[in-house]
Amino acid sequence: MKVDLHCHSYYSDGKHSPEFLIESAIVNGVSHLAITDHDCVDAFSELNKNRDEITILNGVEISCDWLGLEVHIVGLLIDTENASLGSLLRNQQSERRSRIEAMDKKLKALGVDDLLPWMEKQKCVAMTRSHVADFLVEKGLSKNRQKAFKRYLAKRGKIYVAANWCSLQSTVQSIHGAGGIAVLAHPGRYPLSKGKLKSLVEEFAGFGGDAIETSYSNIDPLVRNRLSDLAEEHQLYASVGSDFHDEAATWTRLGKYPEPDQQSKKNAIWLHPKWHFE
Ligand code: AMP
Ligand code: MN
Ligand code: MN
Ligand code: MN
Image (cartoon, rainbow, N blue to C red; front, side, top):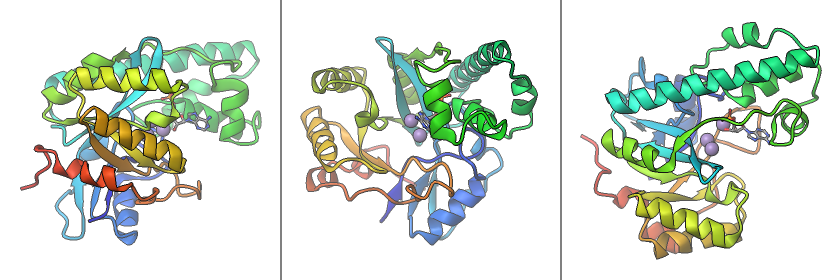
């Protein structure tokens, strides 16, 4: 068994089709793959999930607000047709569109036109800052995505606009309402002190959250161990995923992340009661 429970297709800010992700995961020996696009589930609408070589799990990654901080919650094994989750996702998509429109205004003030028509040509359902980064690179304003984030899109960037995300609690509720498992994504990537991270995990568990990611691309081994301890402490399951977006980013590959430690293996997410396939 080799799972990858976090990756993105071109329906959000990934570069590839869902079919490509699946083929590539099979080549890498992945047995269970969840596609978890930002705030949309369109990858599943025309996907043939009946395959012999691999099990495909429904998934989503929802951006939400916790005390003014943006955190990401992965929903696994959700019913993608669930009406109330659908309405939450449509809201998020419309917040994303408004945010991009506000960024377009800021760009125009800097003398850069055409972001919106460029956006319309993309395949995404959920518009992200990664798209704006690609636009800035295409326009020759930045050398690469990283630099575009640093100069323009990060919190202190020239065209940064805060988003108005749904709350952490409503996100967990909505994932549960759709029959899914709620997973706190990449907890080591938030700008939080050890104490604050502990409070986040505590509140997430208090809201009924099920699991936290304890290994993902490029995680520091010390952070991995700390997350594994946090999961154990709060009786949460341990999930793993590459957070793969793009074949050109050679530091991420489907199915690739540091080996989880023994404690995380003991708390593995596939032991969750909802983890079953017909
Ligand atoms: P958004 O959800 O629109 O705020 O876009 C966030 C996405 O941008 C994340 O999911 C990452 O894939 C990507 N991202 C965030 N920060 C950076 C960064 N510093 N460099 C490159 N990509 C980033
Ligand atoms: Mn992303
Ligand atoms: Mn994320
Ligand atoms: Mn992600």
